Length: 236
View 1 (cartoon, rainbow, N blue to C red):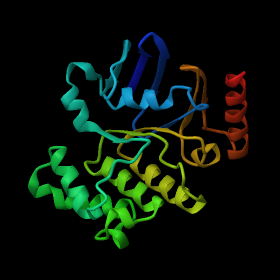
View 2 (tube, helix red, strand yellow):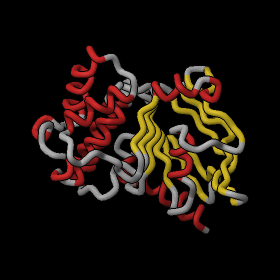
View 3 (cartoon, rainbow, N blue to C red):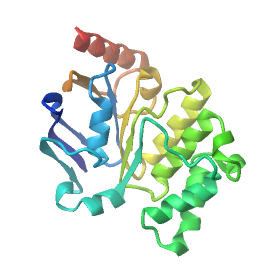
């Protein structure tokens, strides 16, 4: 179980997040949506332990992550909004390097890399230079980086941005598979794509949770309509 409890955050004196709370059960994916400036990326940075909240707590498997941040980081996979890849490396070399940096034992690294390459459909590009790959492939490398140690918590900031429909479907299949072993939190603007595999939507407006919409029992078109209506209401 992954719980976010009453998280608030401010830059200087400007409040960005106010009492944000939600729960992600094992096997679930929460899609965080909102207009630009709603606080989505800031929330992802807090969840990734890259920003310290003013108040509130994050609970992973019953433990407050602030009490043992190193343990939490070992359980965490994070894909930032802006890709930060070593473009002169191949995906295989890059993922091996990243697995080592994250503390994986040497004898396990090759297996971890092979699993991530297979899961993220990178086999045909595994030894090419990252800088020469398409945006969709580079995003899959970043996703493989987040997944290389099979994290318990997966935090993905706008992973579908800039992808065409085929790329978004492929990324969605990977994220759906990742939810079999991770509690997933993902942001994005592609409501119709997110509706294919998210367990619930969390609508942020001005740093506040303005709506929570479970997907169970809703047809895709109805779900998309509800989410878009909540976004429009939050923008008023």
